[in-house]
Amino acid sequence: MQGLDVVIEDARWADLDLESLAQTAALATLSHLGIDAAGCEMTVLACDDARITVLNGDFRDKPKATNVLSWPAEERGAAQPGGDPLPALPGPDGMIELGDIAISYDTCAAEAAAAGKPVQAHVTHLIVHGVLHLLGFDHICDPDAALMEGLEVEILGKLGHDDPYRIIPAD
Image (cartoon, rainbow, N blue to C red; front, top):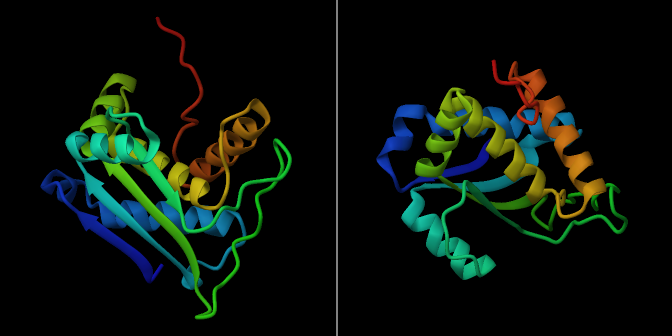
């Protein structure tokens, strides 16, 4: 995906090769949905909890850290709960502008540790999740959440990752 711009504000992301993880996750998501990734543009901001707290406060009025945020370039949400979003169409330049994603190292690493999974696997999930948001998918109501989570599980499965929503019983 040539139109992927990764901006690293927190040096800890370099150890994870976020650019490669984001590329793989974005390509898998777009391919799964039949969208030509060569014609898409998006930006990923790799930051820390302090920065994402400010962004979450400014844009969602929730001044607390979160794992990932997304800003779609266009509103593509479905008209009906559980329905498919509007198609992502190219602009006058022939490119599909998807939007922007911000992801926090601190929260991602803490969540991965708590779940007992590699941080790379969790980050891949969150990038898939963010790209789906850019494409108009959401999880506000149960039918939308079922659709979005189902897509995440399918895409991550193709990448060799476990279902992030499966609850593993304690021993």
